[in-house]
Length: 281
Figure 1 (cartoon, helix red, strand yellow):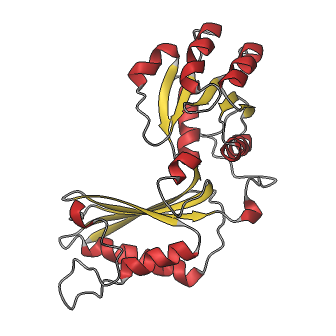
Figure 2 (cartoon, one colour):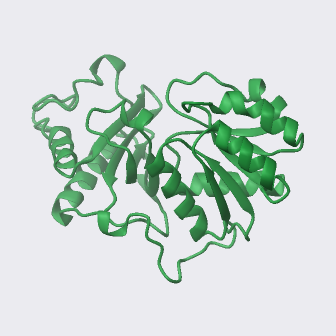
Figure 3 (cartoon, rainbow, N blue to C red):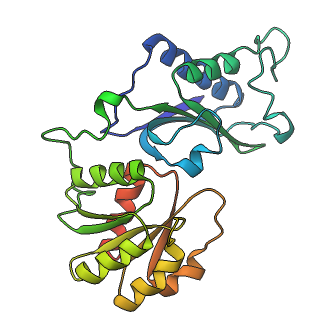
């Protein structure tokens, strides 16, 4: 038997999409997950809001920076061999026996996602399982909008704590600020390390935590960290890293870095991390 688990965020942004085609995507991915577990197992379907920056978008030709909904379908099945990962989206390619499938399912899924200006990622390991992630852009009508009375999870509420957001990409900076505003955080923003140091020097007694992008022009996060630490040796910093960076918590903790948050992260991951760092847990 196969168990189905779902984990759907309570405050998903909306997307502009064809309902029938969205159903087709989920059906295809779920059937593939089922077929990968002939002896039974579990399928987990999740959906969350996520922010994509330029460095992460550069990994995928179809991706652009901005707000997305990410829908993941994960199984604990046989997995896909590394040498055929690049082939599974080709029309008529199939790992199934003759008569068990046409091999058009994943090719169709990819085409539907592309037609909706989204993109797809895949992670698989033989013997452990497979996870497909479907990224669909949030509708322009609701970008950065906050409802008059948004649903606030008390466990994630900022309770008016203050965050200094240091991010050079304007779209990511503004989206992050809007998301934190919605969860009762007070937010200051800086474009680079120089501006971050100036703001922290002025407001260090009010700022509870710094969300610091490590890779920025003019002055990056790694260069700014020692100066921030000198201003306040008790500073709490969450470092944000993109694809391909080599910084470790061991290298950075001496400057007050409590955790490294890797892009792309979901709103819930950000809120949970902030709550943990501020509370000291």
